[in-house]
Length: 159
Image 1 (cartoon, rainbow, N blue to C red):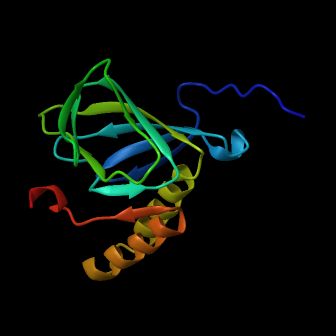
Image 2: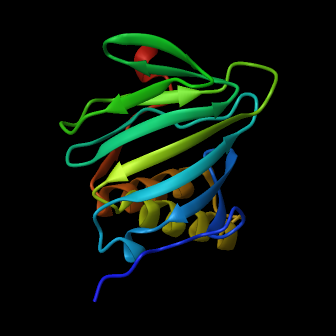
């Protein structure tokens, strides 16, 4: 039987990801895999490196601050109140906080799954802090692929 899910402002699993602090507001487990909502606090200089996901729609609503999004189509500075939608199809994209103040995003993914990817990656990083950078990169790449994502080099858009 389906039921209404209600969550308070501090509910949801908290984790460290992409140099920031994330909170899974509602997980795929709570929505039968239909979607997940992730609150992302992105400090100055932090953000997600270039990546793509073929079968996930990902949207970002900027709650506070501003974030620079990059894709093959160009760069877009998303300020408070802006929405960025990444459609299905595997478009390579990334984002970074290039300001001096933290930004806060509300990320919705459909279907869910990215939330589980973030949980597994964060868990790995927490438990394996002494792994070499090469090992971490390979392991995070394998975790990303397990959930339908592909990671690209940090300088992907610079060439």
